Image (tube, rainbow, N blue to C red):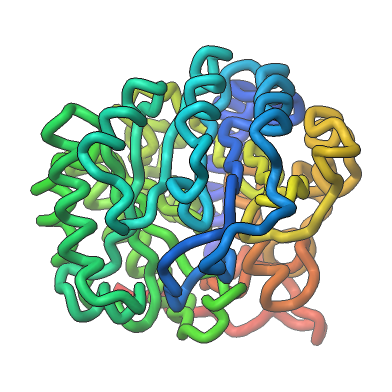
Amino acid sequence: MAGSDVRQRSHVERRARDTWLAQTDFDSAPFTIAWEVTRACAFSCVHCRADAQHRRNPGELTTEEGFALIDRFTEFGSPILVFTGGDPMMRRDLFDLIEYADSAGLRCSLTPTATALPTVARLRRAQAAGVRRIALSLDAPTPQVHDDFRKVNGSWERTMAILRNAQSIGLSTQINTTVTAHNLELLPEMVRFVKEVGAVQWSVFFLVPMGRGQELSMITPDQHERIFEWLHDLALAGDFDIKATAAPMYRRVALQRSGDGNAVGAGFAFRDGLARPAQGVNDGRGFLFVSHLGEIMPSGFLPISAGDVRTDDVVDVYRNHELFQALRDPNRLTGKCGACEFRTVCGGQRGRAFAATGDPFASDPACSYVPPGWVSDRGRPPRATTTAR
């Protein structure tokens, strides 16, 4: 790589670090908290992170324990609280928990499963309780591919109906799509459906091979790169917000393509009113996960327990536990990620590194980028990877 290219990349990385990292103190508080209120779910999706079960676990946090946990969340300020699962609608006290969180000043969202439970009446009730957005999974533009993912015939039609019902009552919607080798070539066709239901955001999830997701084929690093470039073009078009989930490398691609470290030019300026930080959120760095049993983890994709809300203070664990502190330190990264000049704004997906190697600080195997001057374990620079066009 030419010296001028290396200097340009270093310049972009420095500007990103100086102008973005100062905006949000992820050492003190997460931007997003995901609470897996139950692992029960009627579906058996082939890429399920949680390996969800059909019955609720008797060890789930009780309503009163949930209220106490929400009280502690408020110590972080006003993070986004995602009520997730499993299927959170399988908890009878769900709306009580949402209402309590909303009254405490937390910004609530909900990720229901596309069963018969999210009726219009329940969507209205969720909205009245304080839900600002619901997110539903739509993995393909055709029923057959999506239903095969979900292992439930008719789930595609039901998902579309729920999205349209939410739109009809003015409830903000988000579409989540998990990218695997099975639906990679269908992604461009998804754009029409995101527009059709008026979704404010398309959250494109890049597979982390854990849970039942281990059975699926993760796309190649070059395919990741090609999709990142396409998503960046889509983000700049501005029809709806784009979020690359479990893919912090997207930030590196956007920075390289914008060339000036500007958040708007890079396509990171969201219009959804949730005051999103320009700094990239990653496992344990701006993100906190609480399992259905109360385990405190960096994310659902990095299932390493750092404590239990029944015995440990969730605020103290996030701020001071050695695992969380290490995940927020880019100098702890190893391999290509540790040598990368974009490690402060990217850092690689820690859950994927852990799933692939057993080491949460190792290189993200989905990234094709080779940092300038990086020397492999064999003592010589690895062969450069060709980026897909």
